[in-house]
Image (cartoon, rainbow, N blue to C red; front, side, top):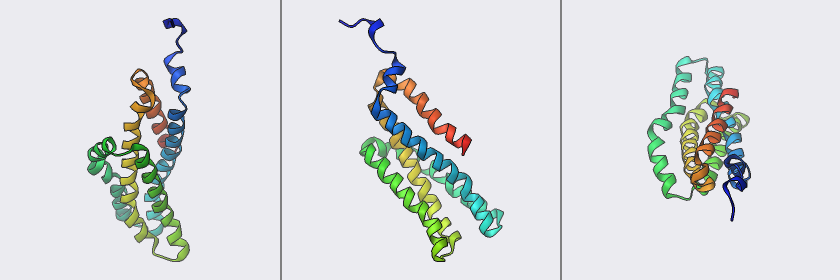
Length: 163
């Protein structure tokens, strides 16, 4: 019979949870990319156009999905396969983000591409974040949920400070 003193500490169990650590590391990389994108997109617009108004429009389009899709994204993440939702959302964001430099290289009006892709990129970010948040309880179990939530919030917040 195992006594309480023989059980590993909750934090040690969480750090040894390979699935959680892999997903957390992936989300950290994704959050760093999000931080750079959210910062760079309005700066790109001001660089391309010199218009503060257009820069403000892009900034609003970046944050509007949070307001409009936050609650529905959580409900969708509870009903759909969270892993697939994260994978498809992140793949979609990568393709849409890549469309911006590609548009510049092929001579398309980059500002038009930015205006077209900025809201969908962030809508997919909201879906991915909702899927991640919904997946954590299943990855770590009830006993580690508090600590896992702390790791998750730190992992998602630090890149925005750095980015």
